[in-house]
Image 1 (cartoon, one colour):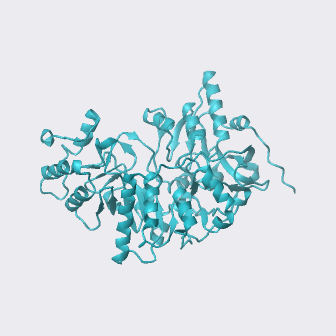
Image 2: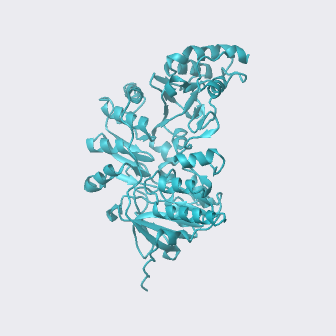
Image 3: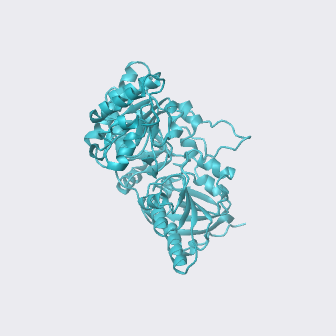
Length: 500
């Protein structure tokens, strides 16, 4: 029997399939692979409903952050009631921190299985960006995978946003694999970053696809800032530490796969690693494949990259497509529960390098909140890797806001990765190796190696005030620096005697 052609829809027509208080799951992982036209259609519908005096909000689940046409447009339309698992849009962040949108921050590796388990409720519709879709229900994704396979599996209906900007020859770069759920779950047979364990397409029942919206739009991905003096110093400190670990025999001379976070510091770290002559060419087993990785692949310093998304600006992505014969054997895109899977992170011996907002004197890391209450982006996948890595590293500048804020504090105002998951802290000042050290020893090395000189004496005074104890903390003063920052906008000059 011949399958019928899939119906074509406009974005506004597609939005009519989505109703108030329903849960909508969108493909994408960062702006890469994120639908754009349909979310704008949903936002327009929300504005029209609100103008007519009717409520309209949807619950939004994605793989990670998205772009302004999704999170931004829906937030501006006051159309998001609930959001998970991660975001980075300024309008959505404002909505979350004002209480307008309820946000659930969670580990990215957990999202797909929690959706399958039903912990987040039913998914009424999945909106999936694709570079190809067939009437037999084969969906070929674009520049990311995220949680799209699971969304397609559990959703009542699927809308495909067919984006002609991405060539159909991407078929083959994706490795689509979903583990079975307990008690049927078995091992994931992946033993090297370049191994493949799944199939190249998402296969769905074509009857679930209610329509296809055709577009031609680039990913809304921006480039990163040039390497600054501070990020360059952080990068060199990371590279020199890893090179020394190789010399000491604590890292194999053949090296290990690298996972790197996203952003300016991550770019600087990878650049510094590539420039260090004592670090061999290496492979990436990570979430986000960003600009610096592509540049290093062209230089031969990164020999293979396994990730969840190609998060690069359009000119870089166009260059990849133009040189596809070179890149197609050096790249693979997987679902986030595979890229971030604890079993695989532990098996492959990942060196994990992520960023922190602040670090306390025990080595606990806050990567999500400002002064303990205002959400920045979310925990993302950092803890998926940190807890299970061969070596868990966190980086941050030693100061922020022109020196008014110290990133090394007595006690973090919000905890995301505990001291038990953190091995190495790196700032522009130096490297604190926390392995095998007691809490008191950790405090000393963090102050002397990582804290900015303007804050070292203040932090030493805090430790002295805590006295001789296993963990040098005092509840009365632990947030003294945060309290001063809240009051004066500056952490310098805390008078510890007022807290005694």
